[in-house]
Length: 272
Image 1 (cartoon, helix red, strand yellow):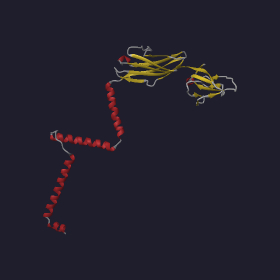
Image 2 (cartoon, helix red, strand yellow):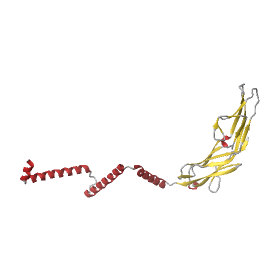
Image 3 (cartoon, one colour):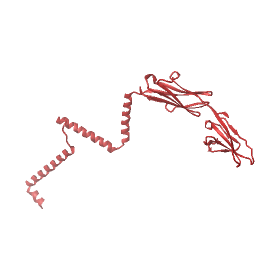
Image 4 (cartoon, helix red, strand yellow):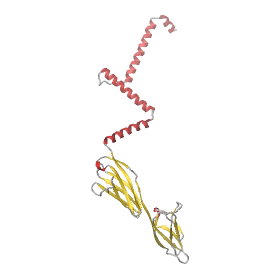
């Protein structure tokens, strides 16, 4: 039975026997049967099998099985064919490539009767098969996966491509634009992206503070190196600060001792 997609279909099967047999419909491939309300079932009982608004997923062979508990059961096959015009899906409509690399363009098509599928360029020129162009078609019932592989991209390969699907009910196409990627812009873009991500993800005052401390320390190092004129010197800020604090403490204690020695009254008060 051949029908157009969207129409209503009734499959009929009659059987006789004693006792009177019951009839059930199943898909020959074992898949579930999609009903009009969206429900999926393994079988449908009754001599008439009604499908409302048939679509491509209903396509296939159905078995009408009659049984009355007296072996053997008998069956007949009815093949349902659904016709519909081509449809195309393109996952990536904008594809970047560098000169010299291998590139594969891809489209997905559905059509029945089976469609003629091919690729065209900017001025609807058919892409020839052979050489550096390798078109591949993978069929699965009414589904077709279209691939176009360019072995080595050259400047003339940049531009617009179309995957075309055509059958007796109509035709359609999908567009893919191939643009040039330069090595300089690629590396610059990756660096910019990394920097932006680092700033965005840090979100940590301690991390940022440590960075500032490292920068300040680096400035001190550069300042002392320039002042001393010797870039080979190595020193420790913490050690220098500790020595300076110790010297200040000793100087303060020595001054206070001399002051007590010249003021006897303070010594008396202090000993009391």
